[in-house]
Length: 214
Image: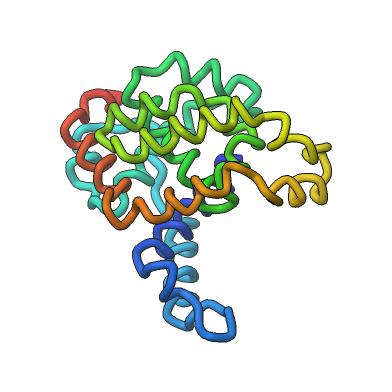
C-alpha cells in the first residue's frame, strides 16, 4: 500500500501545482508538459534516497519540495512489512509523526478516489484521528472539512456501503448518489486557499525534533 500511496502522492502534487483545469487538453489527455513532469518525477522517485534514520541535518538540508516525501519515507520504514499492525505501530509514535503519516494517506486517497475510497480502504482506520491531526499542523479548513465528512460517513454509512460487496463493480457503483461526493469537490477547492503541503513542511521545520531519530 505504501508504495502506491507514495506514487499517488507524487502525481497528486504535480497535478495540483499545475491546476486541475490545465492538466488536460481538449481531447481529455494529459498535456505533453504534464506527461514530461510525471515521467521525470516518477524517475526521481525511483532513485530517491531513503533515510532510515532521520537527522536534523537531513531535515535542514532538504528542500521544501522534497521534505514531506523524505519524512513519509522515513515513517513508512518504521511500519512492519505486512502492514497488519499499521494502526498499532502508528499509535505508538508521537502526535507529530502520526499527523504527517495520516495526512499523507488521506490526501493520496482522496485525490485518487475521493473520501469514498479513503473510508473503503485500510486508510479508513485512521478517520477519527484525522481532524485532530490536521488541526495539529495548522490545516484548520481541511480539519473542518474532514470532520464533516466523518460525520456524514457515520450517519449515512448504510447508504454509502450498500453496494460495497468486495467487487470492483460494487465499489464503482457505490459512488452513485454517494453523500460523500460533495466533500471531494470541497477538498480539491481547498488547495486554492490552504496550502496543505506547505503547512506540513512549515510544521516539520518548526518541530523537527519530533521527527529526528538521532
